[in-house]
Length: 124
Image 1 (cartoon, one colour):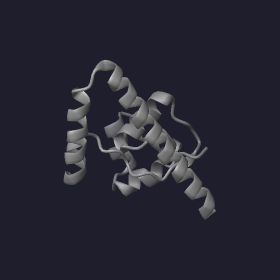
Image 2 (image 1 turned 90 degrees about the vertical axis):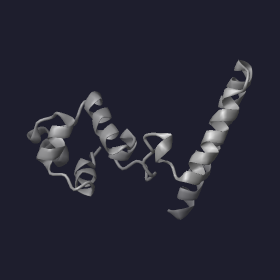
Image 3 (image 1 turned 30 degrees about the vertical axis):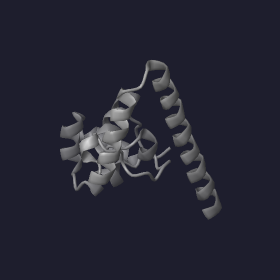
């Protein structure tokens, strides 16, 4: 599997040296990862994914989703307003109702993933 580190690094306009400082790695390690001559360990993959605000899968080109916002404050105002209302409503629920709400949200997300996967399959 090829790590797309160079693409992510260049997208941010960083040099290998700058990225190495941010990730606390040697510049040579960054170069080896980019050349595919060495693979980062799991801890390093997490560090890289967290820095670029993407999933580990995205580092390997396995998904094309937008990076997740680091916090609710990074959401667009109209979406943030809806999220705040939903959270306010969830806080008022009883524990067993919260479990049901979590289950329903999980189902909605799974349905959305399946729908996206089916759409992607039709495009090929």
